[in-house]
Amino acid sequence: MAGIEVAALAAQDVAKRYGGRAALDGVSVSVARGEALGVVGESGSGKSTLARVMVGLLAPDEGAVAASGETFDPKTARGRAALRRRAQFVFQDAASAFNPRRTIGQSLEAPLIGLTRLGRADRRRRTAETLELVGLRAEHAERHPHEFSGGQLQRAGIARALIAEPDVVALDEPVSALDVSVQAQILALLKRLRAERGLTMIFVSHDLAVVETLCDRIAVIKAGRIVEEGACRETLARPREDYTRALVAAAAGGHG
Ligand SMILES: Nc1ncnc2c1ncn2[C@@H]1O[C@H](COP(=O)(O)OP(=O)(O)O)[C@@H](O)[C@H]1O
Ligand SMILES: [Mg+2]
Image 1: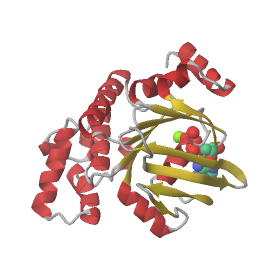
Image 2: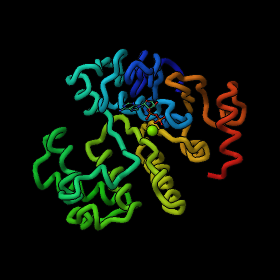
Image 3: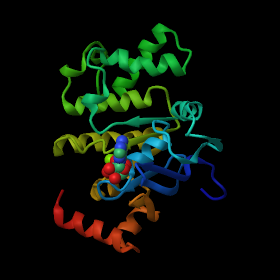
């Protein structure tokens, strides 16, 4: 762990404005290889915007993103495409993240066609293996999204993110739309994937309890700026900033 580590993914002075209002205001944050970074903050603070910029889904107005030591310009389509080859995204709403007309297998194979040279039989095999990795079965590949429960569909969303073996997976409130019991199952899956595969993760959530069980480090974002960053447990136990303290207090009182 000692020495200089090259970040798996790092945002560098990223700014993004919507109609003159800053959604991100000079954000720099990084996640090391094998690390789980929690990004927390109140609704509208810029969490999703940051995650989307980092994985190449959204163009910022300013800033760069570095992946494994290589710097990319996410303002350009080319830079974003390069980031998408290295990082994948899991959406909060798995139901709308899949094309309803495609089988889950077709959706999972799509990134393999673009990102790997696997032939058809190998793609099938990788799809089956990845479905099993996330607790689904090979035959789920033949089914359409409407045949899945919410929890199964989020497992499929995680499978799609993992299938081409990205360096980093960013998950944006991946359990917020699920029932509590299903949330626990998905979180257990993510923990297992971290333990077994050393998955590098950016985990966006407004739920501090969830972040605490899953993450090594935490970045607290307020109005488009990182206000506090540190080891997860220590930061939540002894926040330095009033804003973080208020988030912790709200979580303790809110039971949700
Ligand atoms: N597509 C968009 N158009 C206009 N404003 C947006 C858009 N996306 C996000 N915003 C604004 O940017 C800010 C940050 O949003 P977001 O990153 O979604 O926050 P969070 O994920 O923390 O709730 C909010 O003020 C939000 O209203
Ligand atoms: Mg969000």
